[in-house]
Amino acid sequence: MSRTHPLDLHEILSIIARSLRPRDLASCARVSQDWNNSFTPALYEYVKVSEDQDGLSMDFFKKHKQFVKDLAIQGCPYRYDPATPVGDGVITCVMENSTLTTLSIEFCVLKDEGAHALSEALKTNSTLTTLELKENTFEDQGLQVLSEAFKINSTLIALSLIANYSIPEQGTQALFEALKTNSTLTTLNMHGNSTRHNGAQALSEALKINSTLTTLDLWRNSIGDNGAQALSEALKINSALTTLDLEWSSIGENGAQALSEALKINSALTALKLSSNPIGDIGAQALFEALKSNSTLATLDLRSNSIGPNGAQVLSEALKINWALTTLGLWYNSIGPNGAQALSEALKTNSTLTTLNLESNSIGDNGAQALSEALKINSTLITLGLQRNSIGPNGAQALSEALKINSTLITLGLQVNPIGENGAQALLEARKINSTVSALSGALMGDIVGGLKTNLEENR
Image (cartoon, rainbow, N blue to C red; front, side, top):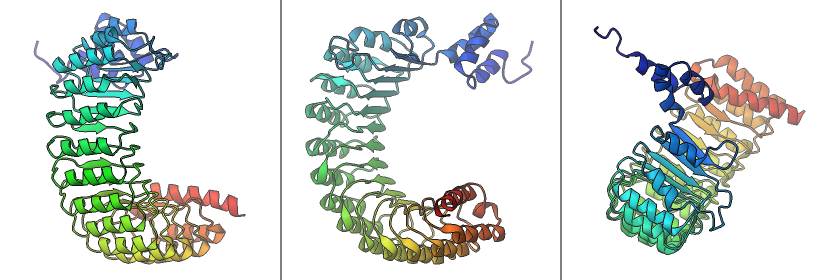
């Protein structure tokens, strides 16, 4: 008989299975043998092995491993006790699975024997694409042994080594050395691994050669100014990296200045995150000067960077020229009303920035009034965050006048501002006048109305 539908029954049931909860999958699998064949693979596609009440046993994994694609080994009960490690036997059993594409090992002891077993398996494995090792206790040679596999493996594309504080510096340097020859890894997450400037120097040398890594996360690694300077040298050469996260990395104004020199040359990086680094006005000004010539950076995160009105003034001049930046985060800085006024001048001419977050910048009513004048002209900004800025009724009224004219803003954050009843009423009046979908409905009204309720309750 010829096929009358583009999908047969098994295919249809398999598609349905992807939308069901585990309990429902188990029920469906018991209906008939045909249903069992269709629903069982989805039931065991993801397995978490752990000692908590939601986890399953390793024996369970062994029984169903032919279906498992995503395996998480979590929360070994005595993770800091060398007597209860994730040893070579467990690793060997796991890596024998030819369907596994994602493996996560968290909160465990990974002894040298286990690291060696994992390394040997990775040298020949051709299915695993994502490996996450989070908050594990490594022995001295663990990461060095694994790094040998990364030189050979050609299927892994994402590697996360998150908060493994016991990794010695030699281990991270060995990993970065492997990047010189690895040609498949595109994402490396080294979040919170105590990598310092020596490690950053080794990473810099690797990035000068590596041509496949596109995303690098060094969040909470104390690389300091020296580390940032080393990475900036690599960025002048590297043409593959598009996203770099250096949040909480102890980078000061010297490090920021070095990175700014790289941004003047680099044409690949599209996202740079530098929040919670003490770069100050001088470091920020250097970065903003680089924006005048950089034509690829689209996202810049500078939250909590001690940026004042002088930095905002330089940023304003850059935004009048830059046509690449679309997202700018300046939360928790101190640009004040003068800084807001400077930015408002840039917003009158800039036609690319779509998201601007100025939460907690002490801009007050004067800053809000200046920004409202820009909003009457600007036609590209979609999201504006002004939470926690000491904006009172006068500032809210000025913004409401702008909203009567502006037809592109979708999200406006005004929470935790003492706008009072008069400010709230003015914003509601703006809604009556501007009823376009893109201006005062959906996310924007949710933001405003939610904020108004809070403000009215707090200020009665």
